[in-house]
Image (cartoon, rainbow, N blue to C red; front, side):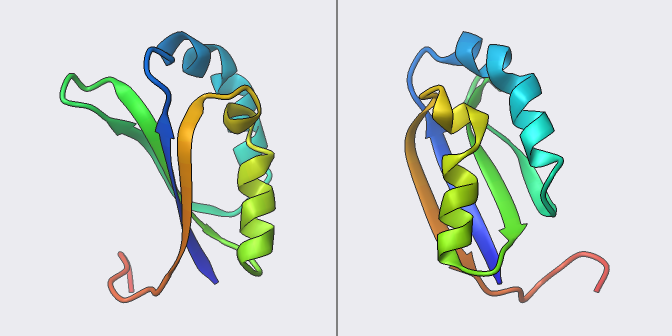
Length: 92
C-alpha cells in the first residue's frame, strides 16, 4: 500500500536538518522510497519533507517514520501520514 508522509520542520531548524542529513539519507536507503525530498518555503529553504513509500500497512509506515533520524532529533513540528491511491503515475 502507498503512504504519503508529510512532515513540517520546526522553526529555525535548518542547522539541525543539515547536521542530521547524512543519517537521514542512510536510513532512507534501506527502504523502497518512491518519492522523497524536502519541501521548500518562499525563499527556497527547506521547511519539511514529503516521502511516498510503499509499506505493508499504516503501522509499518508509522514505525518507519518514527525511526527516521530527522524525527528522532526533534526536527519535525508535525508529521502527517495518509494512505494514497495511485491514479496518475509517471511511466505507466
